[in-house]
Length: 325
Ligand SMILES: [Zn+2]
Ligand SMILES: [Zn+2]
Ligand SMILES: [Zn+2]
Image (cartoon, rainbow, N blue to C red; front, side, top):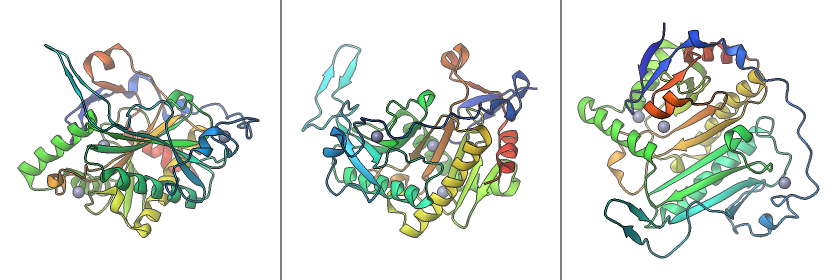
């Protein structure tokens, strides 16, 4: 029987309808063709133009940062408003960076975990950098892996979006968690962590500081969330020790997806608390969401905003737990 489930933070409904498909193993992709080694010419390799324009001091040993050539947010002095009778717009001010691995052949699933730790260290550095800019309302690091997940250049990289507005999904999560806090005097995310540990049904991995589980109201097969176990608002403030634990659990999650489903396309991103308005410090709790991109949205999803997930998160988690890592 299909079941409606509600995201306890945003209030969004999803339908979990496993009868419409499918067992988790229906999503195992054919074995991936070995990736091409370094191309003869790549803009993001050390001989390329992008690498030459790297931002001094922004990267680490294996990672460099460069402004996106086709930015969604641009650097500018002032926000100018363009207000009509009913339509409203403003200049898209901020920053849009490419956070690139130096080595073209870096494969995020198979690199040593220390590379992942470096990647997260760069995320922290760049968030801290943009937090000093009074125009910036929000900074979000994201990663696209595979063409179906929006990866447009083959050289492995993340991106960072620093915007003069709070993104729609963040506003929803901030408002939802505020509302819960107002009524319950508790952080909804801390409650979710407790419930996932208690039930264990959707759990994939756990270490001393983090949990990784399939989301209860999942929007896609194998959607995973990673949360700090202890209440924590700012990703950019976590210590090197905590970051190492985060890299460990994240890397394990990626390996389970990679080995279990043969390198599925996926996105991951960090939902962090905005730095400017610190009234979210009790109610919001930073986390990462990992979204494998194995299904597409149809008309009902677009028209209603209600997503139909054809694999239950319990079965997704059961499948992923069995993958040997
Ligand atoms: Zn390259
Ligand atoms: Zn919390
Ligand atoms: Zn979130």
